[in-house]
Length: 117
Image (cartoon, rainbow, N blue to C red):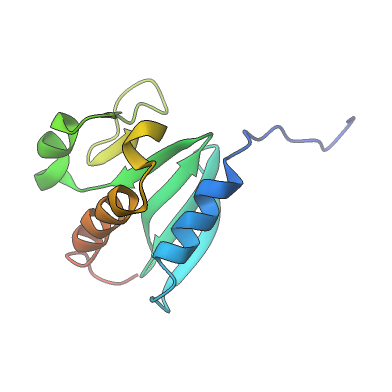
């Protein structure tokens, strides 16, 4: 490994591929490595992502409490303290394509309220 080697957490390529398919109808999606995984930026804003085998969902402050009540969703505490408006969704909560699509749609609807970057 030696000098210049940077450690990065692997992410579930299968989930990343499912997110690509779910977002394939948009022209404003950019993939970016962040939060130790892969983030999908929509209109310049972090929208959804993959960290390990977990979905990172940016649902925004209004949907945050509701999102937490959903099965398999939990606070996104990447840094040790929860990020406002972000949730982790564990694999059982996104097994079905419809469930994944519903989370992505929730995140897209929040991003739509933000000014484009």
